[in-house]
Amino acid sequence: MKKRVSGIVRVQMLTALMVFCAAVTNAAESPPNVVMLVGDDMGWTDYGFMGHEIVKTPFLDKLAGEGAVFPNGYVPTSLCRASLATLLTGLYASQHNICCNDPPPGIDRSEMLPFLRDAPTIPRLLKGHGYRSLQTGKFWEGHFSNGGFTEGMTTKGRHGDDGLVIGRKTMQPIYDFITSCDKTPFFVWYAPMLPHEPHNPPEHILKKYLVEGDDQRQAKYWAMCEWFDETCGELVKWLDEHGHREDTLIVYVVDNGWLQTNGPVRQGDQFLTRSKNTPYEDGVRTPIIFRRPGWIAPSRRTELVSTIDIAPTILSACEVTLPAKLPGVSLLPLMRESKPLDRHEVRGEIYLHDCVELGKPQLSVTHRWIRQDDWKLIVPMKAGASPELYRLTHDPHEKQDLAKDHPAHVDELTRLLNQR
Image (tube, rainbow, N blue to C red):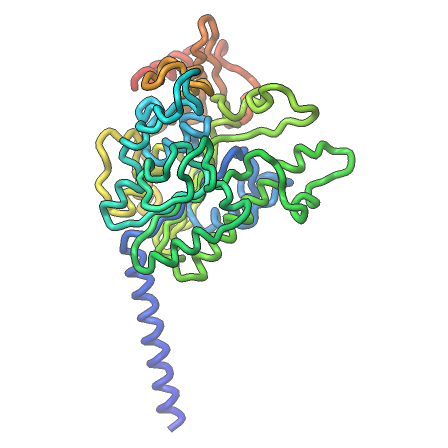
């Protein structure tokens, strides 16, 4: 009798295991939910998984270890509004026409809103395939519906008004939305204004970084990075614990870089660091992570990728036909089948903070840049300014301009830059 019961138990356990495996397989084969984690003003080096010796990011380190991480990721334009629009559309700023944070003097912000309202955004395209979508956090484009979201927290404002409580004060709107979706596929835009200023981290995190005699501005920024990491960890843990670990594609990226200055605050501080709103690595570089267990194998990739690749990757994963004229490529064949990327360079343009003329982004360009393999060229648009050339493996923070020593590289990269 004992043997018979034991045999029945073994059969039941085997059956349960087969059912579980089948459920995981089915989840991995169906179009996923999508959650985008979008950091704000964070340096590309400021993570444990990127080798920072002080900043602690245990949750993002875990996410990187479970997914495909691209340390050589880039944003074409290192200014938040333009960069966020690229994330939502997969288009360069010169294509979606959202190149600057603010309109020209005397022009109302509302005149800038049709650019995204009329664009084929990720949530707008997913809606046609039965997805619901939620906007939270940073969003410059007025009402959330202008971005194609079915639901959202922002209805007006320059940065995101009511949506900016996400992360800093609460995560509940995201949990409520996902719960309400039940079996309907969903897309979540989690773009808290973190670690963006104001740098006012919780005391329990700040005290880890305070060192007597050191500048508190640096400590506060580092603590903000950990606070952002903590909120990402809370969201991912909630997804995993509520049955969405295998059926959700998580995408991590930052809108633009940041390099914290110390000492007294100076006018234009953020732009003097060669980070935000500049073509240098501390402005345009960001790690990019894709995680979906059982569907994307953990790996650390060396390829050059851009945020123009995120939209086609998400849409391909969700089995949505890609819009024409997308300049990026889906990274799924690379991540899932190790197919080589048929591209060896990334590029972008930097614009003025305030637009010169709406609909004419070329009038606001300050720099153009391109990276191919190990070499990066920066071309200033200012009359009489010389191009700059850097070899990033040897000089990741662009301290030594090699343009005069390698004119052939300058010519070749200039030719590539002018092809588009």
